[in-house]
Structure formats: C-alpha cells, structure tokens
Amino acid sequence: MSRSSPRAGAESGGAADSTADGSAAVSLLPTPLVVAVGFGVLCLSYVINVMDRQVFYPLLPEIRADLGFSLAQGGLLATGFTLGMAAAGVPAGYLVDRVPRKIVLLASIFLYSIGTLLTPLASGFADMAAYRLLSGFGEGVQSAALSVTVASYFYLHRSFAIGSLGAAFGLGTFLGPIVGTTVAVDFGSWRAPFVAFGCAGLAIIVLIAVGVRRHLTESVAGSRGNAELRFDHLPERPYNRNTIALAVATASTGLVFYGFLGLYPTYLRTELHYSAGQAAVATSIVGVGSAFSLLWGWLGDRVNQRTLLTVTYLGATASSLLLFNGPAAHWWQYVFAFVLGTCISGSAFTNCNSAMQRSVRPHQVGRAAGLFVASYYSAAAISGFVFAELVNVLGWRYAAFWQLSVLPLVAVAALRLLDPGKIMTSGRRR
Image (tube, rainbow, N blue to C red; front, side, top):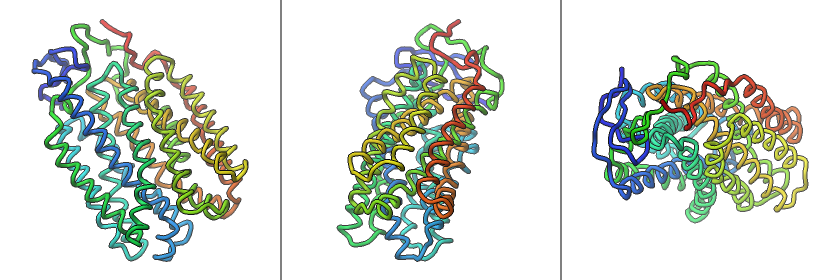
C-alpha cells in the first residue's frame, strides 16, 4: 500500500516529487523560512523527548531509596523503558509508510507524555514498569517517524539530517539530568521533574500542530530538481543482508550506550563518591559528545560509512577501558565520557540509522527506520539489567570490560558483512 498524498521534493529545490510508487506529483513547496521553523520545532520535540527519558538516571538512587528497589530492579527500570521503544519499532515502521507522519508524530508524543505524567504515581516496581513502557512506546514511535521525516526531505544529505536529530539528542541528554535534578532539589521530590517533562510534551504537540507543515512531514525521497536518483541496485526487500548486518551492529550499540547511561551515574556516586550534581554533570557531558553527531553525519555523507563506523566502535572500546580503569579525577571522567558519547551516540547512532535507510528503496524507509528502532532499543531494554548483574558478579571494572569494551568489537565484525554496492549514495543517478 503506497502513500498517495503530495510530497515535497527530496531537497528544497524541486517542484516535482516522486511518490512511493514512482509517479510524479506536483505541489507548491513551502518557503525556506517555513521549512526552517518546522524543522526547528521537530528538533525541539526530540530535545523534549530525550530530556524526558534522561531524567530517570541521575534520580535513580533517590527512587530506589523511596520505593525500595534493588540495584538490578533499578537498572531494569532505568533502561527497561526502551523495551517499549523496541516494541514500537516494527509497527511504527509500517505506520510511517502508510499513515501521515504528522498524525503519527502527534499521537506518539501524547502517549509518552501520559506515561511520564503517570510515573510519579507509581507505588512499586510493577506499576512503574508499566508507565515506563508506555513512555517508551510513544518515544519509539516518535523516533522512527522523525528520522524518516528529516531523512526523506533532505534525502541527499540523509546522514547530516539524522545527525541534526543526534544533536538534538545531545542537547536533551545534556539538559535533562541538570534540569531534572534542579527541579527535584527545588521541589524536594524526585517526582516533580516527571510532571514538568510530561507537561512539556503536551505543549510540544500544540507547537507541531501549528508550526509544522505537511510539505515537510510527508516528503518522499526520490529526486532532486530534475535529476532522478537510481534505486534499481538496491535490494527489493527491506530486510536484506545489509539491514540485518547493521541491525546486529545497532543492537551492540544499544547494549553499550544504554548500559552505560543507566548505571554510570550510580558508579560515579557509589564507587568514586561523586555528589549527585557532579554525577549529573558527567552524564550531561555524554550529551555534549552526542551533539557532535552533526559532524559525524556530515562525514557519513562523504566517506565510506563502514570505515567510519569501524573507527567509531574502536574509539568506544578504548574510551570505556579508560573510563573504568583510569583515575577518579573529574577531568578524566568528563573527557572520556565525552569521547564515549560522541563515538556511540554521535557517530554509531547516526550512521547506522542512515546506512540502514540507504540500504532500502524510498517506499521502504519506514520499515528500515522501524528495524533500527527495534534492534537498538530491544538491546537497550535489557542493557541496564545485564550490566547490573555483571557488576554483582564481576565488579564494575570487569563488567564494563565485557559490556562496554568487547561489544563494540562485535559490531565491527558485523560491519564486515556489509555490501557497499547495495547502499545508496548521492552519486547514483539515472
């Protein structure tokens, strides 16, 4: 079933669009200002999304103390919401290929905002897990819809466009722990930030409804001006050798990044005796590294992505070794938290996502984005629990070695299976 609504061009320079079935449709393009405002609102919506999910980590010690969770239960709750995101991946991909993306975006933000607003009402593990899963499901659908939206509109610069979402992720990762802990301290309760972020999500729904045009959200890639791009070299099926290999690398990325995010603040506070504020700063610096996804995305549009990702994962292995085997000095932890953030969230997230979408035909990009979300967040869902269990058995140093240093090498091995000839590049034209 193909989407039949008019589309904007892959870039802002053309008036004729290609729909999913290859037929031409003509529509009036929005002005650059309207596109810029709409794009800015979409990026802001992702900042709010990420702030919402990041606030749980630095508050985990207070939540555990209040509700009596074990370290393993806390680790599962910290990253277990991503199980909802994983469950959203495949159905979100099909929805994005068939339902107007603007509707999908609005509904998904509403879902995760309600889940966030319910979280302070939790009285135990079971109901908090349910609210976290609801939040994760909405956030997963929004993530898939956003990546397809920006990558389809700016098709020839897909990695840079997805990198802009990575920069929004970085900003949200930086602001979320700081704003969240500040609100919690000011109101004397860990529950206050969840109310604040839930309300912010509802407010962004209004901004998207008013400030984002369907010319932007419903674009289908396929042409730039009058020069049509070739897709006949791409596999006919969305689930092919390249997308599966990238899914394995993506799953390794989720296990590394969310395992790290979920328990790194606890490591800093319990092992290195950082204060809550110092741990929040360290977690936020990971977000600064994520913001460099713009640079990584720019590189991903210009160099061999398999080589770029290989360098990325080797950097993640080295930085995690130095983090958990180096000194407790603040500058050391901040520097290598930044390096790990820019390698995993800045580069791996951006380039695995864009390479997966480049490995399918335009009318299948929703399913590629859904596979990315499912593989990334299904691994992320168990990452905190696995890391906590490894810590209980092996201690922090060896747990970090196996989960944060060895797994990136698994991703490197998976990347060797990629067929570069079946990945779309901007140079392939009819």
